[in-house]
Length: 284
Length: 271
Image (cartoon, rainbow over all chains, first blue to last red; front, side):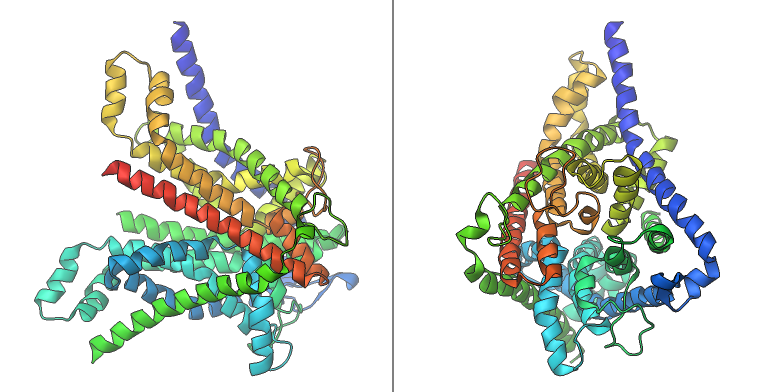
């Protein structure tokens, strides 16, 4: 009887632990929305989302430049990171010999493990001076940040797409080969299309990483809270807006920063939703 | 012709990836190692030696406490999901959804949340406790997922054997299933350590940026990544930033090495 009680008690403990992640999400929502939404209400949703000037001293809070900035650098990162990432994953899954694979796999893992602050530092001391020389200007801006984010999302894209490509049954490849296609054509016309949804999931994960990156970006993007004019002009993203001003902001200014977090959170939730939709379709 | 182009494209991409990595790592090591000196490893931080030792110690403290908070929750909830929850259990679906959500949240949002909840609402101010609680939530989905995988890979025969010998469910979980799953859990722990060591955005406004060693749970202390960020944003200490980058990179290389060691052990066990 006593043992039974212990079993029941521990089952309850396990259940409560399982609820921790639910509690965490609820708490995050409560605190972010609880502080952010009143601020959005005070500023006005339309004014907040479509206002093009951010002047905390005059109580003008429009985050359109930051939204645009985040979207631009994310698109830039995709343009740079996705083709290289997918091709590299294809190489690792279907072209490389075991020896090269044994070198490349830990290398990609290491790339994923390098702290973002180190990437940011690398961007600051290597990519920024390089851009100054080749493009001119301050060297900090959308293009610089896109290149660095493209590098940073590479390991995510490679890892997930490689797994997806490897999961394609060999019969697809063999079928194409039997029809007379070469190794390369077989991989690209039958294996890669079959791995499409996994590769798309990889890209979405990369987007999530790029849009959420903060410190590395803040060091090389220029941080001007204005609408960008060209791909070399300095902008500010939603993430850098928060990290730059949170330290000294107070009152409505602080709440507007939290509201920026709410908007970013909404973006991330949409990305997550897309990701799980694709994953679910994969399993079905 | 088409085959040749495709072959060149994949080879070139793989080459670019490796060159970029080699360039980043090589650059940091080659430019950074000459900047290392003993003064940077003195026990006390002053504006003259800009020692990173306190930051290294803080990193250790924060890693250990974050894991101590996240591990029980992560392991127990994985045990519930794998061992207790039956098919079609509603809670399982919700837990899956929330862990997926948690693992997609950017660290700056965690930082913002940690600041609002632990620093402001609970009044802990910038402190190790606020930082570790934030990080514990951040690595929770990672620990859960790896433990879940590890538990699932324990063969059912183990459980049946244990039940057959008359052990109860609880005893089976603690004496048979969990010990078998240790390598898998360990790989999750190592991944978690890597994430904590590299974290900056979630810590700046929770654990704060004080340069000394944190003496209690309620005192602030910067980790090595935050230290590097602070050095760079102050703009005066480029040399020290190089040196810090080297130490950070070495830590990550060691952590990755451990991780593949554990993964290799697991693979050889299975065969």
